[in-house]
Image 1 (cartoon, rainbow, N blue to C red):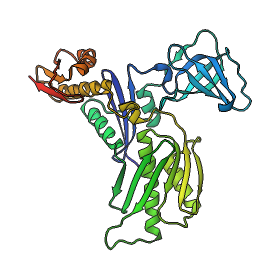
Image 2: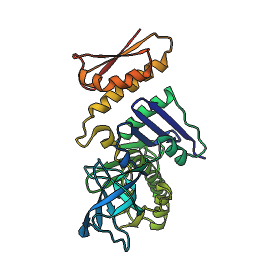
Image 3: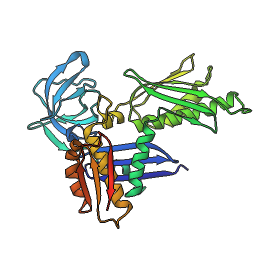
Image 4: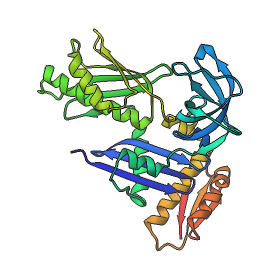
Length: 344
């Protein structure tokens, strides 16, 4: 049986949920108070068709005072400009694109939010039913560890000699599996099969943690693969999601599959489209560290977060919610993204 750990970090401004399986993180959920509720996965809205695009086989939908979403047509869907529809967000925004929508039915009234998407706590309960989330200091540490792990491009597994790299381009996700066994270790078919199975499991976990979707090409170890064995291992690794499409293993030993996009990629959530840490996220990092310090030693009368003045301006309302022991100073001598905690 796999050991599943669930963590819930509720810091002012941002809630994070983490799930680890056998000591490895596979989910990092993040919801911020300033997120656009109409763009969150699972949100339901009334929208108005503003453009029908036959070439894209869909329509753009006005969701109110936020960026529009795109509604792909299914089967015999026929909608006209001006029609009111009820829709649900099936994929969050990414790379400058608005959310992808699913048609629920006819709508009434002005474009507006009907129901927000599920909370982090609700999503954790769905993904790990019956497991009570750990909160407080361990959850803050798990948040940091999961984010660090999500930044890894690969991993080396000493038990099998598997060398794994997972990279994403605009077009696809490339997974490279290689075998570097220890001296004296067998390099036969059984070792390759074991490493391929482990590589598929690890790659699927990393892709879930990074919140990626799209076309995936897995360069397996060796050629002449048993397609049925590889396909069974891939289905076990990527779960029972009915929207995952698996292709055959080609003669070059490459397995292709397509994963649905659902969440905004983690690197975009944390760093924005330009891949630089957003000022709001830097301020949030400081607030989380201040909360960690407050929980670590409840006997200290005060702990002060010192950070760059522009980040202090963003962090101020959040620090105020941490209680009378939490203090904040904007220090021009501190650079962007850096902060100091002063105790006492």
